[in-house]
Image 1: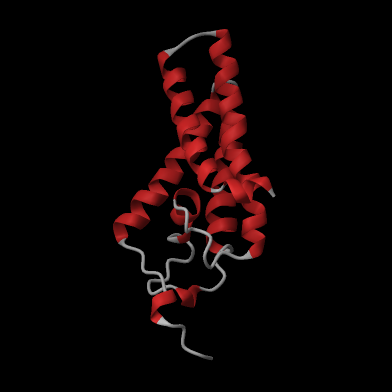
Image 2: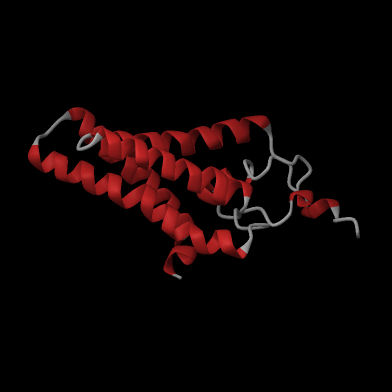
Length: 151
């Protein structure tokens, strides 16, 4: 096996790993809270499905090869890059890139629709804050990955 040039290897700092993955967990949690407005059981299912798809399918199985990274994080360094950075598609396999638009839609559309419908029924400050948070993260991630979402 040939040695990968050092310039192509990624090194993830602990703060990047922790803060990036924490942001993804908060996004999933905010989505689960929005779904819980109508059904707590559906919120648990949403949280489990989104967590599984993001951290297992995209994270663990989304990396093309672990030896491209100086610090192997089993895909956990790749997730914040994939969601929040423009250069996040390097070393991500084709299956994960095809799966990303569906996971993005799952994490964005249902929670936003549920919160918008619940706001139409009853105004509440917490629901407005939840809607703003979900919209801002979804729009930010959507604009970064626009090319992948169009396919």
